[in-house]
Length: 123
View (tube, rainbow, N blue to C red):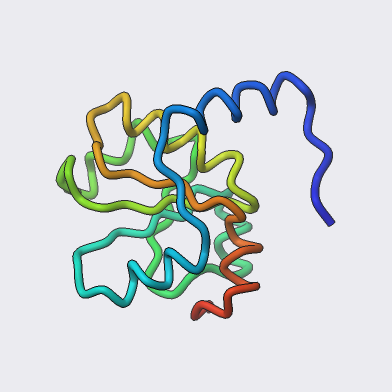
């Protein structure tokens, strides 16, 4: 069941979505299989990540993303796909990364629910 979000939250998410790149789970599958470098970031809370996540994803919670992203040594042009539960938090996170100079960050619309529906490998 989808969560009920406040109007103000939805407004900032929609504004972010207009400024970022997005993909859906089927496109993520293609990206994972195309042989090109990719980093998948799970920006959910730690408890969400520990309950299940995409195989090979890196956990950096949205609350510390801007502070911790550089600790991982990802290049600013590396292809990144960020996901959360449904694509709302990841849209805001992708916008932050874009503002920090990460030019190839995507938000996964549909998020964790899309990953599960697409049958991508999870653990």
